[in-house]
Amino acid sequence: MLRFDNLTLGYDRHPAVHHLSADIPAGSLLAVVGPNGAGKSTLLKGIAGELRPLGGQILVDPAARATLAYLPQRGDLDQAFPISVFDMVAMGLWREIGPFGKLRHSHLHRIEAALAAVGLSAFARRAVGSLSGGQLQRARFARLILQDAALILLDEPFAALDARTVEDLTATLLQWQREGRTILTVVHDFDHVRRHFPTCLLLAREAVACGPTAEVLTEPLLARARQLSEAFDEQAAVCRREDEEHS
Ligand SMILES: Nc1ncnc2c1ncn2[C@@H]1O[C@H](COP(=O)(O)OP(=O)(O)OP(=O)(O)O)[C@@H](O)[C@H]1O
Image (cartoon, rainbow, N blue to C red; front, side):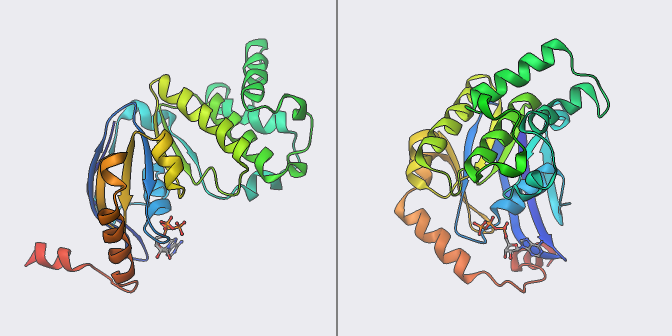
């Protein structure tokens, strides 16, 4: 479904993630974890096509690439438009009906079902700008439900949410997994990862470990990740391994 092949991603030629190789099978529910600045958001941006690799490749199943859904970390932009919650969620259908397509009855039912799935039925007519942070995140999830994507990338979707909202949105993730979708989620709460995510990628600019969560979230590997992150040279233009490869 998704493969990183000696992947290096970065900004202004400074690597933020380097020499990452991993295989993510279809149907994975994978947590991307690591210290602040480890490159987690950068990796998701790379998969979403917002950032071109400085080296190596990201190989995505073409069918998944066509329907990829990406939820970036900050939702401020979603609240900038003077539209209703219903209309914001309906945007999840844009791939199906196009920008000027007409909503049919079946579409209306699907939008209502997505709103109900995230507990926002009563908010459909509210202005998006009037939602609380947790309600907005629920609306963003409802929009994702309608996108019907095979590959879903979520950047810290649970940040600053109350326990009930985290539980409800996690249920949506688990439902997506049961439907056979592949989900990569940046998460900081290790207890949450241990409870719900079968697999895990531990990043510290490079892959420290990738595999079953119980084997990845161990004290020695987490210590290694912290150590690598602290030792990383922010100003490095190219990494040592690249020099070695070319010598
Ligand atoms: N737009 C940008 N321009 C330049 N450097 C950037 C940019 N975005 C991120 N970086 C740098 O890339 C590195 C990785 O950042 P990234 O946001 O991917 O980390 P992260 O693991 O998601 O961190 P956090 O847990 O703090 O959200 C950091 O050193 C960061 O300063």
